Image (tube, rainbow, N blue to C red):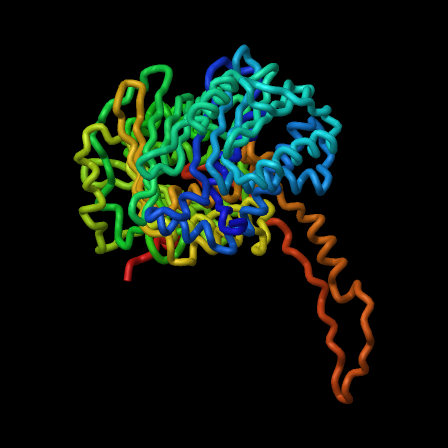
Length: 586
C-alpha cells in the first residue's frame, strides 16, 4: 500500500492540520480543527471515485507523496524539538512512517486551545505490528531529541505511557485496533471521553456514513493566526465533507461567518457576447464589492469604486488565452487615469520588464516584452454597457459564440459564484502561465524533474481529469454553502497552486513567492562551465581548415524598463493605428 497511498491533496488536507497541533499559538478556547478520514485502505476499495483512485495510485504521485512527507516530517520535527538542526535519519524515517500510516488507515485528529494553550488528540486505527511500531517509534523520537523519558500510565483501566515535554505532557495508549496520542498541559480535553468510547464501542467516534471519505470542521479565523496562508476574509467556521459519488468526488461544505455578509443578489451582468468558443473554463461571481474593496492591489490603482461582480474565461489552443472582465462605467477614462500607476503595482511581484503602451484606437493598454504572453487591459462597450476586459493576450472577437447552456446558472436566485472547467486543460494552462510569470519576473523556476513539477505535468497530460463544477450559494445572512462535483476534488488552479505551495520556503504556514533570480550567480556559473574555462585535449586541425573556437556563452542583460506611454505625456509621440496588435479571427 506504500506507493499508492500518496497523493497531492488528501495528505495536504489532514497533514497541515497535524502541524496546527503544534503551531497554533495563543488562540481562544474551542475546537480549532477536527477531521475524520477513512484512509486509503478503505476508499481504494470503494466503487466510487474511480478517477481519484487512479490518480492516487500513479507512480508519479507516489514520488510526490514521498517528497511531501519529507517536507512535513522536517516541519514536525522542528516544531516538536524547537530546533533548527535537521533531524537524524532515524527520526526522519520514523516520522515518515507515521505519516504513511495516517494516509493508509482511518484516523481522527482533534485540535483545541482551552485557555489559549494548544492541545491535540490523534487516534489512528492500526494493525498490531504498526501499533507496536508507533509505541517504539515515539520512545525513539523522545530519546533522539533528548525531549524526556517515558513512564507508564493508566486511564480508566487502559494502560499507556506518558512523557513530560517542554510543551506539555505527551500521552499515548493502545486499545483494541486503535492507538491514541495526545499532547496537552495535562490531558487533552477529549482524552477521557475518547478512552471511554474505545472501551465501550471499540471506536473513538462513530464511523463515517454515506460513502463519505472525509469530514473536516475548522475555525479558519483562529487557524489563520498560525497559518497566514489562510486569507483574512475567510474568518468563518468551515464544515466540509468529501464523498465518493460515481466516478466523481463530491464536496459539500458550509462557511459560517461571525457577522452578516451584507450580500445582495444583484442582477448578473456577464459579457456573454464577448465570450467565444472553444471555452474550456468559465467562472462568474457577484455581490463581491465588499471583498474587492479589501484588495491592496486595486486600492493602489486609485479606484473610487470597486467591482461588485466579475467574469473570467479561458479558451482552448494557447494556454495563455485567458481573460477576465467586470462592468465598469467610464472604463476608458478610468484606464487612462490608472495607467501611470500600473508599473508600480507590478513591481510588487518582481522586476518589471518590457513597457506599457497605450493603443488609442482600441482603447487598451498593452504590456510588451513579457515572455510568451502579451497582457492587455481594454475598455470595451457592448451595447449600453461598458466593461474592463483584461487578458494574458490581447482580446479578439470571433463568430463562434459560447454555448448558451454555459450561462444557465444566471437564473439561480441566491447563487453568488459559479465555476465550470475542463480540469486537465486548466492544469496544463495554469502551469504554463505560472512558468511564464516566473521567467518574466526574474524568479527561480523549479526543475522539470522536481516531484511537484512532474506530477503537475502528468495531471495536465494524462487524460484523466474531466469536468469540474463549483457553486457557492448564499443560504443565510452569514452563511455560504459550497458544492463541487469533480474527479479529484480540486480545480486546475488549486492543483497548480497547491503543488507549488509544497515547495514554498515556509510551507505549510505561508505561500511565499519564488526566490528572485540571481543573474550574477548564473553568469558566473555559465562562465565557469564554458569551453574557454575548461581543460581539454588539443586536436590538430585537418589540413586546409582552421579550428573554430566557440564563444563563451553569455546571458543577455536585463531589459531596460520603459515608462508608460500615456496620452498627453510630454516628449512622447502618440502611437499610430498600426500598433494595434489585436489578433484577427480566421
